[in-house]
Amino acid sequence: MAYRILKNTSQKTLMLFTADNTAIVVVGNNSVSEIGLASVTANIEGVSINQVWSSADSGAGANGWDITRGSNTVWQTDSTSWLDFSGLGAALDVDSAATLGCERQGSRGTLLLELQKQYAGGHRPSDSTY
Image (tube, rainbow, N blue to C red):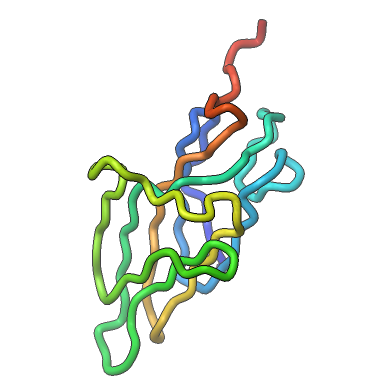
């Protein structure tokens, strides 16, 4: 299993779970972006990382997760942690349009990310059918 999307709404919220190294294309319409919804044709311009829950093997050596945007490491966790960037008033927006990468350090671990989609002009697509 590379990753699993647990929640995905047009209102911008996305919950993503992984236990393996993975890379997710976030930018584009619903035929390009791996987080786009079939019912929403608006282009996603990036994602912010709102919250991170991580667990990792507590054995010897490197443990935790590296979270990357393209080739840039934007956050590293060690062992087990929870970070609420948006709750502190600043979601992690570094290189928000780049592919989101999750790389596990060590032999075991899980990662849960709460992401917020960014649409053109900062607006989410309308849910109205009119």
